[in-house]
Length: 218
Picture (cartoon, rainbow, N blue to C red):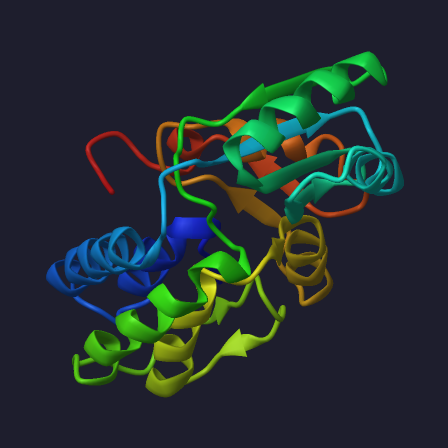
């Protein structure tokens, strides 16, 4: 089973045989062009905070009237917020004052996974709808619904909805484990999800990708 973390949706669908590598690149480029063409400004950003609860975060957002949304939960005390860049910076400052273990800005200038990108998603849908997409050959789990993406239309819908809807990695990993997945790995150079897995109890074993690949094989 594969799961595409945020923009990893394209890699997951490619891995599952639902799209070609070239189609993945087309979707990425069209998504970016649609976003830049529909956003009214570039004053947006995202931030990551570790060590506060969801209620703590919502309390800060409400208290200081910040135009932000929680767009992902990695674990019970690890979240991503997205929205106005100035508000992101205010939030990170206040999160540190509240005792967050880590509160840092992500190197993006787009409010991914918020309704601010709904118009961009509508524009992206024009390209996705006429592009060849096949039924996944192996299960792909949606980070938006935690349901299996079983056919080509479901894959297309996921690509479109992914950019303007929040997701929940915590619930996704737990659901994958409940379905029978015992070993998880992170495909790529990062080890962020591997480290994060230590804070998700009873959710399977997370291992380094290289430990699953034999010498000289992929």
